[in-house]
Image (cartoon, rainbow over all chains, first blue to last red; front, side, top):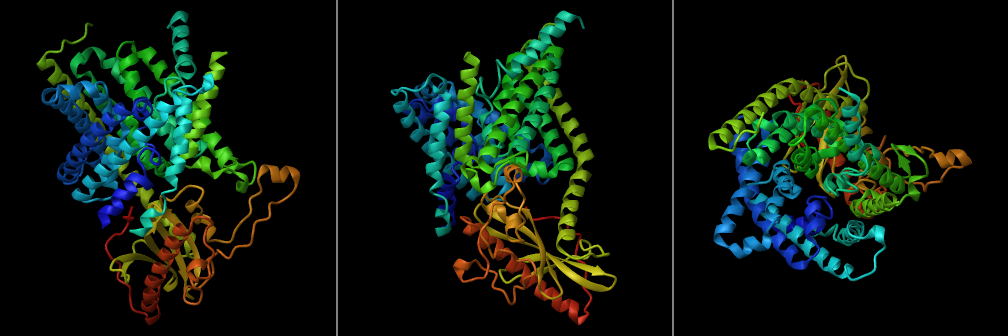
Length: 193
Length: 200
Length: 231
């Protein structure tokens, strides 16, 4: 039951993009078309889950026993960068069409604050390994959800008349703001659990 | 240093603030821009912390650029940047704990701030140390000004205060602007305004 | 000097040295800042204690001890003494039922079970809403804004019975009015208000047990050095 609570909170109440402000750059850059949004969402889910597990084990197995927690930022980001590199190589070998579809987004995931952000957050929140994985998958699902909803809106926006200064990023930001407002309506749902 | 170099470097600096403003023009560093600007002072502190990392990493990377083989440059840059971010984190926790608390997780997230890695790759790796220093200052200043502007806007509309000085009673403020949606909306309008002014 | 070529040996050496330098630099800075960081944490705690209990001349932190609560965990209690006499207790309490999770409060009680003052140590509540708890439950102070000063008027705020200062949890119901209590919750932040009061009530239970120790004259054994705050 506790896991359902974590999932609902991560996807709706504390949506990683619309409430926690992680992953904005790719959010604005990738969300112009629905299919790229879906692709990015899938890639992030995959990388985030593996990255959370590896960094979690790194923290508990290496950093904490040796008292070198101050190396957390530097080791986490190196792990994430290498992970993304490996994932890229694996996908290229295993499924070239998927690699083509994701294209330039894969290396971009390294600098996606969601990955590093979630890795650090699960340590701060003192989760168990299982809870961390649940949290990671749920967060990625929330990210994908926000991304897909946003991209459908943006596809529509592209067909409307927008004042010149507002075109592109400004109107996208305001749209995101309204979407964030909508998601605020979910607050309090976790009190049920 | 002769006059010509000085002018060139000053131009590099001003570039970072206006023509290549990281937030309003390059549209980078949005995550901290939205998350840490619930007040003017928070935005400014985040900007300054990032500026420090930017200047240090630009200098070091520019100094070491010939000793880093091309294929490993990204991991190498990341190590340098992460080192300075960790230093900022430790120093803040030691001497400015209240500030560290309000900036929270976004201090370690400076390491994935696209601005820092982007500048290392686009400028510091290709220019000399002095220019890289000025670029760091310029972009850092541009970032700080953008964040401070956004922070003050949100603080003013949301609570009637600027840097905690109360202009009108808080009850008349639109609290929404201190929350998540307000961040998006405020930034959207600021970018639009910056675009309009730039065009003229 | 031309750029180093990307041979395997060069790449490995270059990365190795950079990592070595980084690790060395970080270890050095860590050493330099370890103490100030611990000091800052301790100072935060001491300041909070000073804010919530009357003047004392002992060291409440070294004389602190843990008291079990009825929910299975324990809270840290800091006795404030003047000479040999206990003048008040500060309790480091918390609630995990805030809107965004954990709220840490330091609350001080005098020997008559009244709340002297409180200080919110940490929280992640919504800014502008739940975050008002840092001052909501104290007597409301009106700070004039610029416009009010220029035009010479004062915004009248509705009277709220929200202060817990000087009140006794044994005689006053520390619950929000919605739950039948005597305290007005923060507007639009009932969840935060409930959690806050839960923390205060928890602290009261711990205080009541300590008060028993103090009044029977039993000596309080100082527990292990307790500077860690639950974060």
